[in-house]
Image (cartoon, rainbow, N blue to C red; front, side):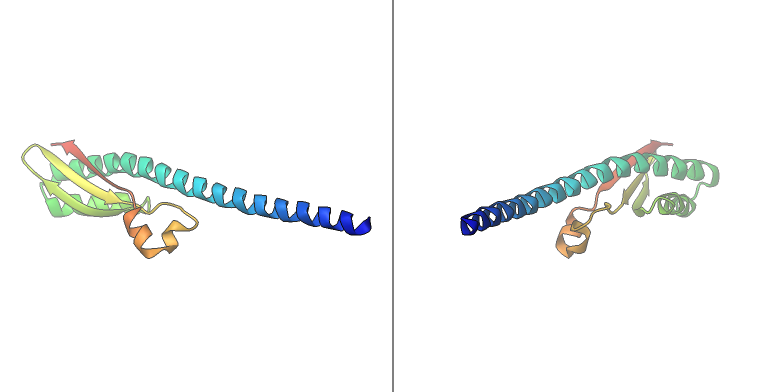
Length: 125
């Protein structure tokens, strides 16, 4: 009888361990997905602010170089990188990117490059 109790406990322990592994993996996948979605929303909001600050500088100095410097400063304060600043006759366009705060994705080179949220915003001149 004691042998049977040991087997049942072992089966239950094995089942619980497997369940724990599955729940952990699912939770990790959900966390990564939420972190990426949150980063995408944040980078979109930040792109708007960066475009406005760059536009204000461009209006004052009439210099795309100065506007880009202000954009980089504003984005850098929020751990983002300015990848492009362009001005046409009516607007100033700024593109930024920011890495998501993930546990695993940022450690996998090809995935990290593909899953870095990017946003482009325009501000009327």
